[in-house]
Amino acid sequence: MRSLSSAQVNQLTTGQVPAFTSINIRGLSSQQLGAVSTEVISALEAGDLAGLTSQQTTGFSTSQLEQFSDGQIAALTSLAVSGFNTTQASSLSTTQLVALTSVNIKGLAPAALGSISAARITTIESVDVAALSSLQLAGLTTQLVSTLLTSQFAALNLVNIKGFSTEQIAAITTDQLIALKPSNIIGLSRTQISAIADARLTVIESEDVNALTSGQLGGFSTAQINVLTTNQLAAINSAAFRGLTADQLG
Image: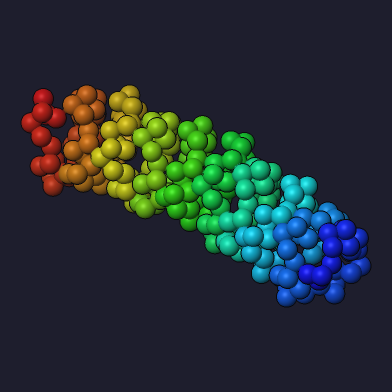
């Protein structure tokens, strides 16, 4: 099929789709794939798309991507998804975002993930959020961070939560802070913790405060220490408490 011109590829019909194999699909260039009609795109078998490379997927237009079924999206590998640029990623529908798997979502570039609208970012399943890397999370705008559902926030892990910048941390809402768990809050660095607004610190649950380390508490300013509730102060574990300085304690 590589010998076909773009014009010839565009003339392929849905009736010819059953003759396609994953091998000859992999032989198409990005330009040829970009010439496939939207009718034929939607008729391609999911298994035949599983072998696409990132170079090939760059050729798909947003009109073509809109025709991808949930099954076709789910069949793409992380390598194929890594070829999506910001325009392509932002065109993915809510059902297509839901169809992404915890495996292929890892392929989205940080900028591509950050291009998804606030209205659609909330449809990404929690299990997929947990699979994101710290570099991918760093690609989210502060608006997108503040839009994440509490269930998505709770799905973050101690590794990927490290990807948030201080600007992103400052954008976290009170509900999101409440949604944090001991298993992910321990991933926050001193610098990240220092970026949490004083007024919002009081909503962090006692079990989360108890999980904090001496290194993390060292990131609290005197003002932050002063706003902690009595329940939060009582929840600080003994090892972490010994890490507080005289200046912090006032």
